[in-house]
Amino acid sequence: MGLLSDPNRRRALINLLTRLNAPICVVCYMAGVAWFMGLAFEPFTLRTYMALATGREFAAHKRKVGGMPVDWLVKTFQARGLEVYTQRFSRTLPFPDENKERYMVKGTNVYGILRAPRAPRTEALVLSAPCSLGDDNNQAVGLLLGLAQYFRNQIYWAKDIIFLVNEHDLIGMQAWLEGYHHTNTTGMDWSPLHGRGGSIQAALSLELSSDVVTSLDLVLEGLNGQLPNLDLANLFYAFCQKIGVLCTIQGKLQRNDWDSVSGYSHSVQTMMLMVMKQASGRPWGDHGLFLRYHIEAATIKGVNSFRQYKTDVSTVGRLLEGMYRKLNNLLERLHQSYFFYLMPSLSHFVSIGYYMPAFGLLAVILFLRALDLWVQLTAPPPTATEDGVAHIEQSSPGVLSVLTPLVISHVTGAALYALPIHFQQVAIEHFPVSETEAVVLTAIAVYTAGLALPHNTHRLLAGEGTEKGWRVLKLVAVLYLAVLLGCTALINFSLGFILALTLVPIAAFVTPHVPKVLSAFILVLLSPACTLLFSVFFFQSCRRYP
View (cartoon, helix red, strand yellow):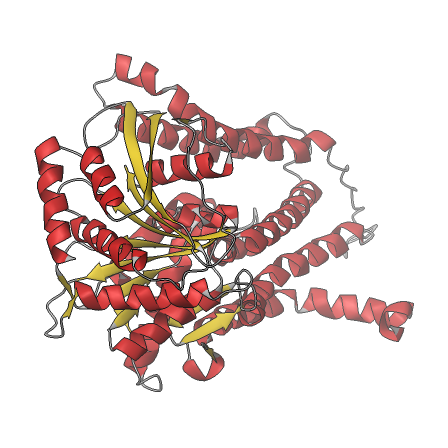
């Protein structure tokens, strides 16, 4: 405190930070990137701790009716002694889907409830399997029906178990969750549920498209980067090790040669796949919609590759039985472990206390640049130059020179959010394009216009082109960007880190004194649109199943 309270020491510290501002910013950026890349190194991570015939019959009835065999599922659930209910739903899409070119999606969810014989039925577990198009996921529905019959004959259940077969994947799952919790956040039309269990404690979604699998992949990423409690991943990994099933995360097997270059590269790719999935904000399975209701959920996906090691569906059933028996013994919701983490492998994780400093090192660059700009703005200008010519003091920039570019940026963002959907009908009437192409082209047009508008504001506003004017504007923009990135990282760390990785360098170091062609190229290359494009290419290059 003495350093900051003493005016002379405070002035010396500020002079030091301004004189070495650029080198310190470069060091912080390199340290932030190096810190994040080092998270995948195993010594820096923490160890994690603790019906085949029915499927074929379901596939035959599915082909017969050309969709989800609702009547057959109802009879099958009833034959297994479950309480069976259905829910109809419909959803109007903003533009036709890619499968049947339709605006209206209608479907039916079928679910059966196994009542707990040893408890007051105040809590429940969910096992779901989506009814996908074609022959996809038929084995998952068959395994679900087989487990329903097996679970019905057991007497140790202390929680209701809900077996759900949802149609149209995420749309059907969202309709069922809204009906179960008596909410409607999407404007979807659905019929009320006539049967409910207790408060849902945990849920698993099953995806199997083959009678045999070589490995089971665990999918954790939910809506807006949400993750289930780490104990759910630990439970899956523990039972895979116990039963002897190969398990993966992000489609990659765990390697033991962490001290080699190839092993470290493998961990980095696994962690980066998780980061990019979180940053996308979309749920990567039906389980992702459960997380918004504070229900711990994950998707188990069967992978059938060219490996010689094969696992049949019965082994997957043993795995699920063990997991549900463990969840059945819970006395409270999963909350003892982490909710914010990254996983370079299933046996190791990186907690929030380890990966947030990487973002902090990037964010501190913006505050250092803001401090440097503030010192330059508050420093008194010299009254005369060395040759004796009087210095003309520049006028202070007006408020409009600062607010106008910020308002234009916000209006551009709002236009990118709203206009592509509203202008799609106008575009298809005047141009030979489809609805989907119209949305993409409108978004590109709005984004391109947004890049050009702030550049031309200096022609209309006085004071922005002066030396003091661009410093004031950059000071406000840098602080605003730091606040936005900080809020984004608190909600979705992966999205905030990727944006900081590309936006911080250009926000900190690009000035009007940089050649216009070079600065324009750098700004476009590191813009959010190009960042999205680079992330897609990088994601596709890293994504492959074992």
